[in-house]
Length: 311
Image 1: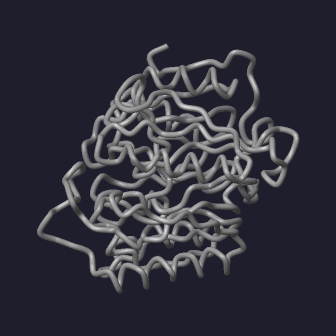
Image 2 (image 1 turned 90 degrees about the horizontal axis):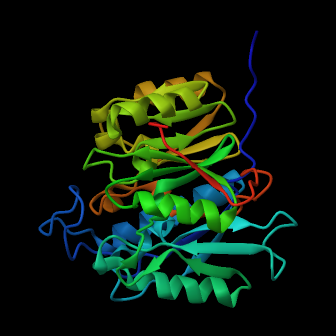
Image 3 (image 1 turned 90 degrees about the vertical axis):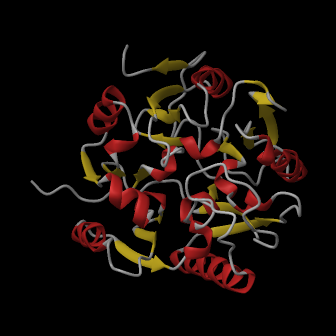
């Protein structure tokens, strides 16, 4: 029996950071190389192209100005995990809440204060699981609403202790997955929800138990190899309705992935984000969805719950 695509109900409103000061000043992931600097004009052209493609697909985009001392702030996905309250969208002054990231590396921690002020100035409530190196580390690129839970990767950037903080703060179930691959340091480099049944998954990012647990959660996974994940950034795509915005590859090495998505009924828009790959991120890293709704996309669970593969 044919199973029809049921679109994700979130992923239509985003916050982004304009790349006015994007550069590689340090090395905190395997992609960064101080001798390989992004071209400012091409960087802005690629970013503007992404914003235009998102809006053409039906997504709303709001922009935060980039701090001059925060070159990685352009990777807006990691500013914080944002939810809508159960009672309505973010137009209400009490509707939205942002759990701000507590970056693993000190080089990025100044981003959070600027982002928190932006959210608060627009009526969002704001909270923290840790600050200034004290408390649990949490980076929002490790967190996705999927099925009956918030799926959160931990290990390289997010602490296991941060899972409990998220579960308690939001009153949701958190399913933790242990990331072990140094090149897929965030979940958004190895996992991309597509619709209610399908997701891009790279099992090589996780330990054996976590890889098995994630594959068990996804009825129809599009499994990609370690090489595909690291060279195409395919899992760092976003989905707006039935449109997948995916990083383009010069050599067509993502052709298998694109073909499978099109077989499933998705429209795939491929975009050149090569300048941002120099910093270790692509489309998902540049975009932070702000329309994940508690009670709709994340079932509410009093006091919250953390589920780990070993349990």
